Image (cartoon, rainbow, N blue to C red; front, side, top):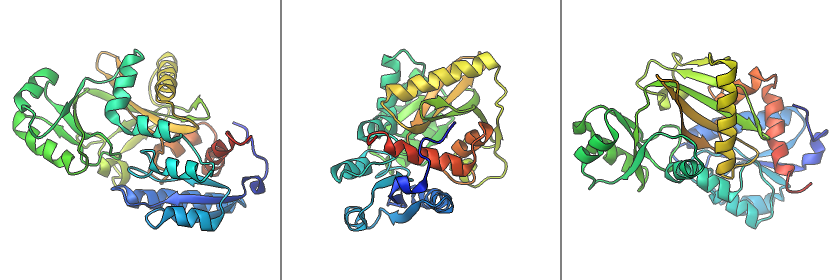
Length: 312
């Protein structure tokens, strides 16, 4: 994948937005620092901006030409920072406000995928007053309880019995007023990164944990990442096409990641979309990029190039 921008000075002054005040603040700081260092090493005039502190003031006073968004969770992936940057006429990486909103909200994402004829696991919205016996009967056990607007598996639980349901819903509502119950897919988990409308090599995720949770994502050394992923060439092409359709249907742009499962019968199901995936040493997009022949520095440069699309 060739670089479209030839010199670092073409980017101007770049704000690397990180931190913030979401539940994923710590991960964002690690992602943002990795991005910042990669840009500086390539001669880009880049600066750290922690969005937890008067971000509009920092951006205006800094007179930035563009922004690399390395925020995860609320304030970063939900359209909020995209709205701020748009109001200040500062170009930025990745999806615009609409793409961020649609991809962050798991319930809206899944509804759009169903409208587009794309497969996703069965789901229903739940609250503390939901009849847990009815949900267990309709969706089946085990199932997942997920906050609608959180990432990194925060507030998420695998539920194996009706007795566990109320507690799992209560945990999820600590993070979000909107919660869904989702069918458990027994099978293998995969992820596909999208960069400039190109699907990168598929990664299969394997963990001894009950599911690919926060600990498996960021802390465990027992998580395995298989790339090549073990799918046949035809299956991988099918998944890459499905990932691109899922990405485009949510009006995402620039870069992102689509997660999905394959059940024991070989059927694929979309799980969720990530408009600003992690960029840590445990993160998936850098792994996929490496398999495609892109170094971390190349990847960061190409993501920054997505901020140029509306200004060229």
